[in-house]
Length: 77
Image (cartoon, rainbow, N blue to C red; front, side, top):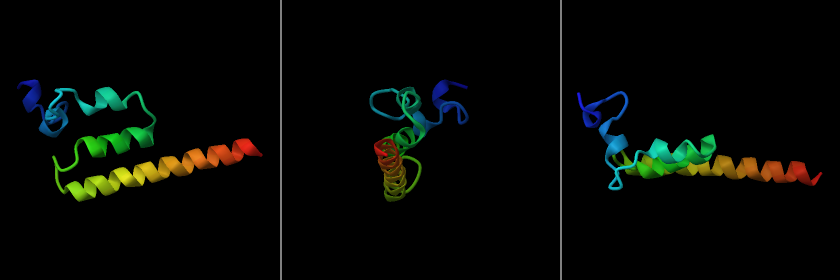
C-alpha cells in the first residue's frame, strides 16, 4: 500500500493539497483551535460539505477569539 492509498495515515483528503504538503505538517505548530480552523479551511469540501467545513472553521476561530479576549481581560486586572 502506498502513502497515497493509506486510509489511516495518509487518506486522500490529507494529501490532495496542490502543494503536496499535509495539513498536519503546518498545524502541528499551532495551538489546538487555530490548527483545527486551518485544518477545516485546508480541507473544505474534500471529504463532504464545504459549507459545513467552513462553519466548523469559524467555530474554532470564534473560540480562539474568546480565549484571547479572556486572556487580555484577565491580564488587565
